[in-house]
Image: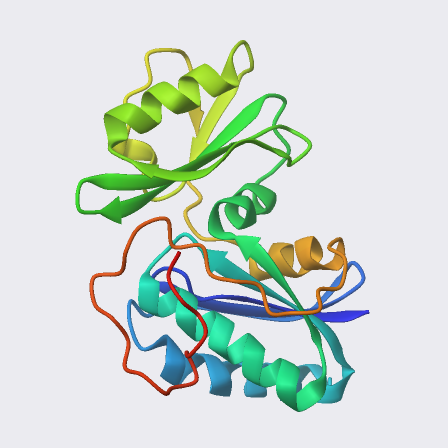
Length: 224
């Protein structure tokens, strides 16, 4: 199985082409905005440099959020278009799980925390097997710290993500400096998911700052 992993949920625009345990190509650009202009030519260049034809991609792993509203929509719209053109399966991966899967093994619980701005963070807690102990949520840093600490119980706690420095947890913990998910890890997560009959839906967790224009490629990717 040859997979394409993509992540446009935050400032990074990342993609990777993976075959089994082999990463055939991977690239990350920290761009802030403009994912819709960067992602298509990036993937096209990756297909060319790896020698993989678009039709050979059997599954796409795409980050569905939480994250920046526009960025999440770009990734899902690209996956939708690729699926229509090349009949690839699409599997959704949350941004928190994507970063957790990108980190080295940790004997304990890993809290992934992203700066959601507006005085909030996106967060989730994962066990060492990668399963969610606390699924993704949005909250003020103080409330997030309490929820994550309670979920970790007696486990050794590790924090990671762009919002790790925004929370104050009253128990011992370590901090992993990683803030960007590895697109190859996203592809690997997608490989373990069952084929989905429909495109995964975005996970926004809160209303968008602005509504998108009607009748675009984004139609059907409604906020929830």
